[in-house]
Structure formats: C-alpha cells, structure tokens
Length: 202
Image (cartoon, rainbow, N blue to C red):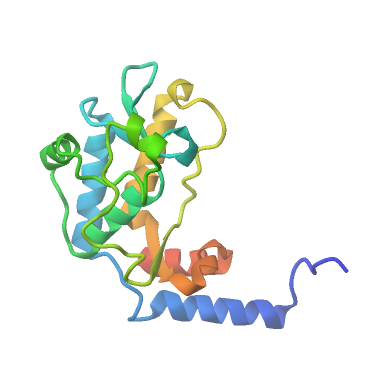
C-alpha cells in the first residue's frame, strides 16, 4: 500500500495545530530582536572580509582544515557546531564584533566539530570542539529554516558568492530554531518550519 499523498485532512490538521502551538509556546527559546539584527550585520561584514575564513557545513571535507578557494578566500569545513555556537551566543543576547571573531579564530575558540577524529585532528588548523554552552546537553536540537546544504562539487571551485550565501544562512541565528532533542525529526516537518517562520517573522 502506497503512503497517501496528500495525507488525510484530519491527520494534517493535528500536525498544523501542534506546529502552531510549538511556534507560539513560551517554552520555545527565541533570540532577542536586537541580537538577531546584530548577527545579521556581523555576518554581512564577515562574509566579505577576506581575512576571516568562511565556515562551510560539509563534514566529509576535513573538519577544521583550511581549504583555499580559487579566489584566495580560506574555507573551513565543519559540522553543525558553529551554528550551535552562534545560536547559543545569540540566545544570551551576545553579538561579537568582527575583530573579536578574528581574535577567536586566532585563538582557535570557535567550534568546528562536535568531536574530531584522530586523523582529522592531525590535519586540522582549527581544533576547537566545544562551545561554552551546549544546546544538545540542554536538551535541544538546532535546526535551520532555510536549507543550508551545499550540494555537490569541490569546495575550492564553487562560486564564492554561493559559499558566502551558505555561510550567512548557516551561521545566522535568525535562520535557526530549536525543538526538543527527543523530537528532533520535527525540524524536518514542513508544517513546523512554516509555523516557526511565521511567528518569528513578526
């Protein structure tokens, strides 16, 4: 038997009601408006500053390594750790300056992975693996509203503007939301994403 497409209305109505309830719930952490605006401004400056690496979410490309783009811009592959780092700061109302970000890269204080394998660590320039606040440890799953998948292709040869746009979506707390970790799959449900987007845009 094939899965019904679309699902019956009585089923999807329950999903929509749940999505609306979670989107509006006071128990759902949200980034203060001032921090959302601040991170948007920071990332606009970050992505055009050639002195600051672009973080790109591609686990299999060598987390923590520096990959020179053909334009000369440094790219650093990561898992979702930098998104956790950015969102945890933003939820506390913290917006770093671009000079602070440069210093944190120099001090290797920005997480690039949850855990680095031994082979990765040996090749990595950046090896930070934990942020001060672990959203997973607090019981949350970090999700993105707009997709941050890069697609196929060699990082060093991808269009730079596409990599910049990816970094902007990837690290922008305004493009993120939280669901309870045991319900992590809800982050992929279109009705949940739509409800969160609607509430957070107001």
